[in-house]
Image 1 (tube, one colour):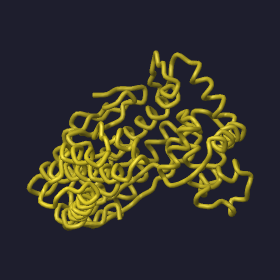
Image 2: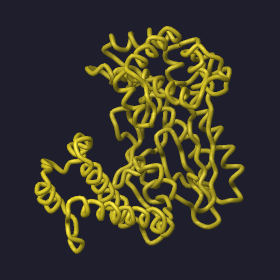
Image 3: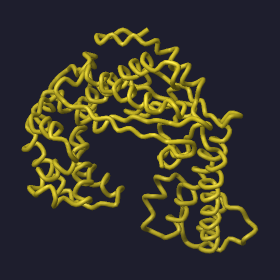
Image 4: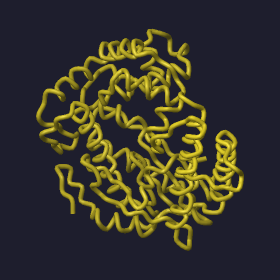
Length: 383
């Protein structure tokens, strides 16, 4: 049993064992027909492209040694087939882009093709192992496989058996709400109290515009900046993160927005200075981290540890209040996913939402809490 200052008294070992035993259903056939078939077709196309560029006869199957040998005949030296090395050299010759794509497709089909299919039981359910305290911040994690790290596109194929559906409940913007509580920043707290689109409101504040003048790109950029500020990401790191989302920003612009952020949210700035100068980092529930050396870790541990406490308290309440009416089939960061019968959906959704709000209220005393609920019938989760 776990006993903390907040008296989380759930038998976590029994819960984790039940979570593994129940598993979650995966739409095996639809996944094969749609994703696996699509990736296999893409692989054939990219292999034919590589063969054509390097002059490899059609009967030959591609493998790294053959590609390297044939590339050298074309004056191209491939020193490594690691994705990191290949990506670093993508601009030097078009062949590298094709090899990167080939490697990525091969890895996908291995990891999320044969390996994934082998982990499904006869009822097409997957049964990962779960750890109650799986990280330094006491987050719940899964392994063998780590379903929490499945790409969104693959998680869309989680489903429910006939007569049942999946219900997911996710804390909206929980990291920022925790920061508002921890730092006591008045402006951030007021933005939550006023409701509406938080990131558009922050964007309007930082860019000195009316909220109706904030574009979708502006919102995405400010969201990345805001979340990055919580964890001490550098301007360069933020620019790189935005590039991955197809958005552009100069390092100078990122620097200016960082300065504006701390000017507009001085409570956060003061709190982070205190964290960086402290030898002890505390969560909202009173758990302490000691002897933390890395600055980024000092900024992250309190937020992530508090998020873990909130989710665990909510799991306790959901388990107590819903009992045999549901199966908890997935715990995804700040999200709980349940499986239940169709006729119980309305009741389960109401209790699930209230339980998660009550769980968060144990820690968030001044900051309002918002839960995003989603219901899906068979073959519809994530759509």
